[in-house]
Amino acid sequence: MLYKLLTCIFVLFSVSGCDSRSNPPKYEIIYNGESKQSQQSKQNQGDYTNEYTIAVVPKVSGIPYFNAVKDGALEAGRDLGVNVLYMGPTIADWEHQAKIIEELVQRKVNVIAVSANDPNKLGSVLEEAQKKGIKVITWDSDTNSAFRELFINTVDPETLGRHLADTLARSLGEQGSYAIMTGSLNAANLNEWMKWTKVQQQKYYPNMELVEVAATNDAPAEAYEVAKGLLKKYPTLTGIIGLSSVGPPAAAQAVQEAGKQGKVAVVGLSTPNLMREDLKSGAAQIVTLWSPKKLGYLTVRLAKDLLEGNAPQDGKYIKNIGDIEVKGDMVIMGQPIDFTKENIDQYDF
Picture 1 (tube, rainbow, N blue to C red):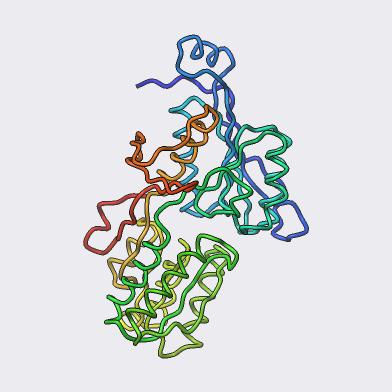
Picture 2 (cartoon, rainbow, N blue to C red; picture 1 turned 90 degrees about the vertical axis):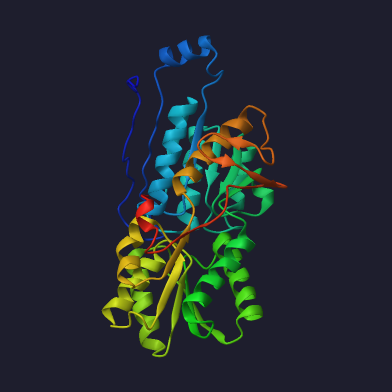
């Protein structure tokens, strides 16, 4: 199938290469749209009635999980005939996100969809966006509900949190000490998952002990140092749960290098492509996730629906996604998937 040439594509627009909080963040912009003439032709054909620009802001740019989200968002832009801007900070920091959102307000986008690094501190800039008539939604990681119209969640947080405790318990024989490697300590989604992981472990696995929660700030190099530090600090550690996608690969590498493969179990949330070799070698036992590409697609789809006055409906089938679940102002995309050495080659993302 031949695709029409896109006349407006901007890729890799950068501002500042420094990670300092006092300087602007580096980010990329991807604008995916057609010429006004082509869009007018589609309007005349009834394919869609307005030109919309939907901005998608991840917690951090450049890691595989959010790269897959970007791919899904851009695919939705092509399918739905909307412009998609993808702009993310180089570090998982709410202040850098706020600067990006300020830029998007100036650009007068129609929707800002953000995976928040802090549930409250982005409030003022998101409220400013709403005052300007911009619709605000969250995905992956929520804000206070006062700052947005809708939250698109990957899975039910209680289900996921309890499930992570179960996978570790199964790998440990329900006993031993473990640590949790999270991303940002302020990320609402990670904290909610961790809460239910602790609840499940304390209620059903009393012979397991959580010794530390360590932040990686969603940075692969930092996650690796954190994992090495945990193994050194706790010589009898028997398990690590990685709550963000950089955690399990870093933990698996540290375990393998320390010669503790088979003695320290690694489970958590990451992509199949990052964990394939670790699962096959036994450096990690179980990895859980959903499709981040589908999450990006669903975010853009629901953003466009909101602009057209269509609220999400419980049980509705979404093309390329499946049936969604709606609980109040939260949309749940689906159920988590477990990846093991037996099934890992069935997945490629």
